[in-house]
Image (cartoon, rainbow, N blue to C red):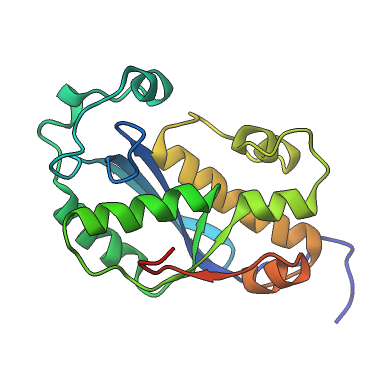
Length: 200
């Protein structure tokens, strides 16, 4: 095949996910965003507010300052059981991607535990960990990593916008490093691809 000098075409399938929480307790999910990637392109993105599980519904002023979501805004939102089923259907068996996946996966784990729901067993990879290995940035926050890869971040701490941004960052990283699968990129950077489990 003739080399054109253009970046390698990325053939990737995964779903990026991002959560916001009502308070410091990870079970207090109040918003989620999802972005589906097929063949290296974001083909669909969606998000919803969430009424956090019972016992985790208090909104801290700090968290509200970060994301702008209030208790009143989620009073009529779907409860976690319904949202969890929607996430499971949306994601299927996809690899999950998140920026600071340690946070987002702990939200999934703890919100599921709060409602005594079975946790899905998807694999996941963290774009924050990838960025630490792939770049020499003074900050690896999502806005800074997005800027490094020329990815637009329209509204930081809006879960749907953050999920879409993380998805596009992951594709851009894979393209820069010449990999056509995110798992290959992670392996090349010595970043683990983990399994979501109740143990962490």
